[in-house]
Image (cartoon, rainbow, N blue to C red; front, top):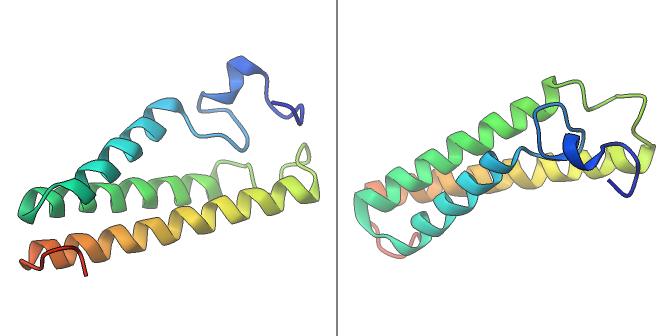
Length: 109
């Protein structure tokens, strides 16, 4: 919002640039906590759902028109690319955790 790309009302909806909708942020936070705190299959399910949510976020980030949007400065476009990369890494780590927890490993290692 401070960059002027979104208004307060736009920043948390589906039309926002450089912002995710509040429900998606909330789901990812809850799934992260569950994946880390639970054990066994329940942790595997939470981590698998987190990996899927991250995939949806990354795909959305590439195809929602945000990247390459004329309203974004070069710095903001680079920041969005960074956020997508971090989300992708979290998704890969969550998928790895789901795989390991689903196979009976403890501690996600």
